[in-house]
Length: 479
Image 1 (cartoon, helix red, strand yellow):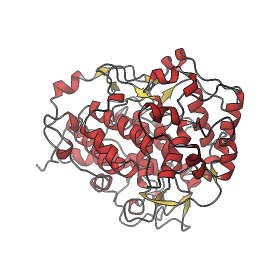
Image 2 (image 1 turned 135 degrees about the vertical axis):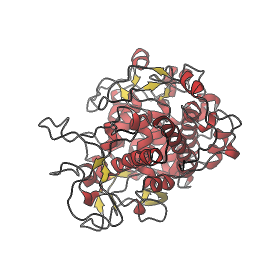
Image 3 (image 1 turned 45 degrees about the vertical axis):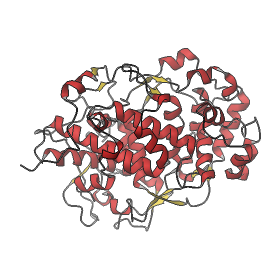
Image 4 (image 1 turned 30 degrees about the horizontal axis):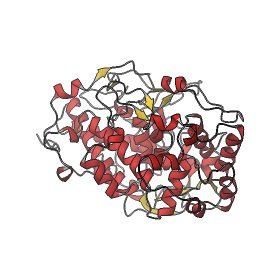
């Protein structure tokens, strides 16, 4: 029987098992045949440079004035006009969201972002934070609690017949598996998946479906569930390294991180953790990438689908209507949808999806978790530090009014600094600090992941396999 060729000989199952231990995984979905498993210590959060944040001079001032100014700065990040395109296809906006949901979900007390007297967590509170996800790029957002239909095939939901199916989309398995209707909105037609955040919007949900269909396609080639997981994880890791990172980060920094472990984030076995600087600031750069509207598919009644419509599609249907099957052709290279350019402004629709605008929540979350400023972290890592005038040059006039207060031009919130750095370098991707944090952490986690292609004996960057997101979409027969 035809078999999908592995990248190379995998690590032995004994080696993989030795890197795994059972864990009391917090249930985010349906109980099923897949219990969560994690590398030791992987449910912890910590700082990349703990000594740096012990000095309060390297953090934002802990005052109500700081809270008020962060609130106002976040509100002034709203972009009132149409978003601006970039060279990055829009599919990578949602791949970044998918990766984030695979890696991190903070189990922490609920934060009232409207509280004018917010204070940073204490060291004890930071130590008690727990990560619900497994930070190993192992697709646990797909495989944790995944329902099966037998023969190692994942259960995929059928779309609702609505008319207006996009051309070329054959079959009905284009939706997430869903629960039945319920008077309780917490369960009404909710997705039966490992991480419900992958059903937050229809593009993210359709990407999750693509990974499930890719799994089933590999099984149908004759592989067991265990073999299929290993093969799909390796291809997912290749997508991250060679298709995602090489677009959103500096290719030279990506190559350096592949060549040898990054000493800043290379914890010993049993001490893996999720870096707060990555999870709470650097990897949130993707929050500025959504467009205000998309050319979603040819059957959509208007030329463009406004972003807010993507967050409430089920309406009166039991499942995703077939008219909402995505045309990935519009979201990949050569398609009409490209990501919003990286900078200090955000899609206006993201300011009205929840009571507190996303930009405000991002800035305040960095404050309460005691992140270092952008300047402090860049300097400690030996990277170029942006000057006051450089940050000012990429801020809008309304943002500059706030940055000039409370010394924010010299001590800039880390998330805002990373966005300003990307805008200042004008290369269409993250700047030096952003690239270092994002590439350094993701590649380190790939090294530690079960079934990692980087665990194979004799592996080198020169022999690294190349498999793209378009390859996965074709394998899944959605492109």
